[in-house]
Length: 122
Image 1: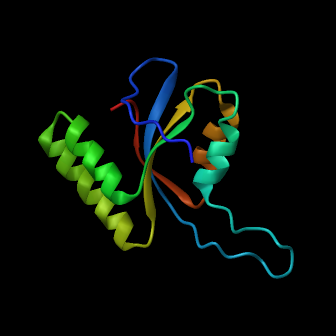
Image 2: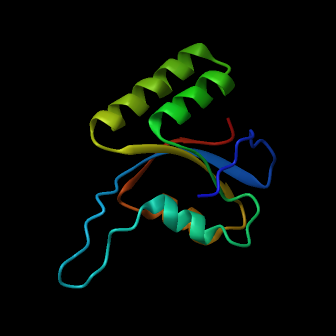
C-alpha cells in the first residue's frame, strides 16, 4: 500500500480523517464484496499525485494528530470521535484526495461504510 509520510497542506488536495467498515465478507450468491475501501481508493489514485493513504490504523492517526493538531481542545474532541468509532468496530485512516480525483471523492463522500470525521487540510 502506498503511504505518504509527509504533511499535505497545498491547495491541490483535501485531507480527511475517516472511519470505515470492512468486514471482508463476500456474498455467496454474487461474489461481490470483500474489498477494503482503502485498497479501492489506492487503485483509484493511479494518475493522481495527491490521492494517498496517509495513515492507516488508529495508532498512526492518533500519533499524527498529536504531531500536527494545533488546538488542544479540538484535538481532544477529534480523539474522542476517533475512539468512539473504533469502539463501534470502524477502522480509522487519514487520506488525501486530489481535487481532480472526482471518483475517489465521490466514493468517500457517498459510501455508506465510510464516515468522514474531519474534512480539510490539518
